[in-house]
Length: 80
Length: 381
Ligand SMILES: Cc1cc2nc3c(=O)[nH]c(=O)nc-3n(C[C@H](O)[C@H](O)[C@H](O)COP(=O)(O)OP(=O)(O)OC[C@H]3O[C@@H](n4cnc5c(N)ncnc54)[C@H](O)[C@@H]3O)c2cc1C
Image (cartoon, rainbow over all chains, first blue to last red; front, side, top):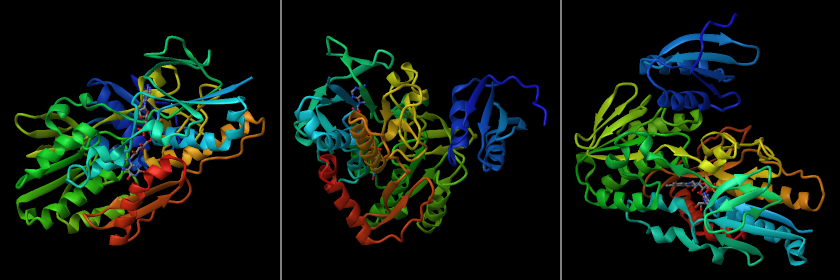
């Protein structure tokens, strides 16, 4: 898959973080950024594929894209 | 030449480690080839698990304090000072009272967690906590006079100390109000940031039905954004607003600034190899306990086991032998499920937790563990 043309404002590298690490790390970062900012979450935890979209929808943030890389995925989330 | 080992932080991890080093390296300390210094900013050692019982009138904050020099082996040099800066290239520390920098050959960071309620507007003013000594005392005043209304416990920040303690608090509160015939008049709500009631899916699966049975309301995907102390409401990033009469908040946590300033990790948590506990960004620096970013819970039992690992590794290193001891993620936790029943979990990097059926025996085991803690800190258990 080609990388989406998105320039994240912040990156959270949660690779290796045990469940529920990546989602918690993303929430922590979203807390600290301004509305409209895009956060890229790096996760190698399969659970993130359900956790992240579920939470993004619940919180009204936009999951712009999910990029599959060799050994991890990148979730691009825009703060509402 | 003398090898100087400096342990920064005289809480659970640092104190157990300092005593472990005195024990393992006694002969080397006696002949002057090794010196061990323990630095802490408070002359007392503080045992935080006692605070869970303070709001229910079952313990006093003083039960969780002992002078550090009574707990630590005489061969360890205990210095009471606040360290302000770590320079891992020059291998030295600066402290508030110290005129000269403190040089080290090996440094162990055991600086624990810091509470940051100010990160959420209104939280410090509107919410109570039992994650600090002063907080637990104030909450006791509130709880003892609380006879009706809505009690909300909100887990605001993660990671936080003792991931089980918020569950324990609502289980204990439920039982405590029932025993006093007040439960009909008190509603209890528990909020958690993600889609289940605990970070660990196995513990969440165990706790959720107990909460249903006990009529403890649950709000998941609830990340507190602000608290309005006047209106007595707490609002989440997800747009849910809850009215409360008594709010108990588990505040956001971070490590200490000097860790980030020294480039050892973000938010004050030290990036470490999760088996050797060596800092990734500097030589001859270890981290144990809450400040070591290993992904396991911030728990006293973890700090205790990690202290044993680093004690062995340092003893090997100063003797010029390869260090072989490693940490396997071992975590042990008693979980109160009421005022006189508890469960127990034990897990590691490979084995997930499987909570034991709650019993009175486990409750007494938890209390006995807390009492015998002073022997643990001395390195005797
Ligand atoms: C309410 C509550 C209940 C808990 N219950 C349990 C439980 O049942 N079981 C369990 O296993 N764990 C429990 N815990 C968690 C446990 O208390 C902590 O995880 C544990 O204390 C961590 O040990 P530590 O050595 O990393 O840090 P701490 O014990 O917090 O010690 C850190 C020390 O470093 C000092 N320090 C920090 N910065 C500096 C500086 N710059 N200069 C000098 N000194 C400094 C601090 O003053 C402190 O003395 C509980 C915690 C709370 C709050």
